[in-house]
Length: 105
Ligand SMILES: C[S@@+](CC[C@H](N)C(=O)[O-])C[C@H]1O[C@@H](n2cnc3c(N)ncnc32)[C@H](O)[C@@H]1O
Image 1 (cartoon, rainbow, N blue to C red):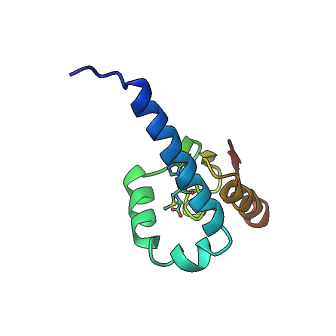
Image 2: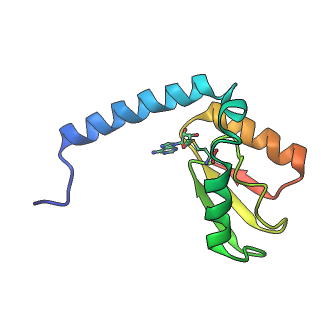
């Protein structure tokens, strides 16, 4: 089987991404209230698995509102990507509020 996606598959993926991005845009205002505590165990385990991140560069894919950024050591150099600009706006506000060292794309 070819590892390459057909144009139709790519179109479907693009539409699905767009739908999900809009869903997260709508969720962004209530995301922290709804998903902070519920997903906190998994976030902690992920960061623990990475070990000492001091001085390291981290790429956080699907960074959302940045709830996963605080557990990193303060001098971790984080870059967050997300397809929802609404989620990224909130992540940027968190970084400013908490004095974290991260940037977003
Ligand atoms: C369940 S939230 C998790 C957010 C954050 N990591 C956390 O721990 O709270 C998933 C995030 O990933 C983003 N996302 C999902 N699929 C993505 C993709 N293919 N490219 C970019 N961002 C994506 C969504 O917009 C959303 O902000």
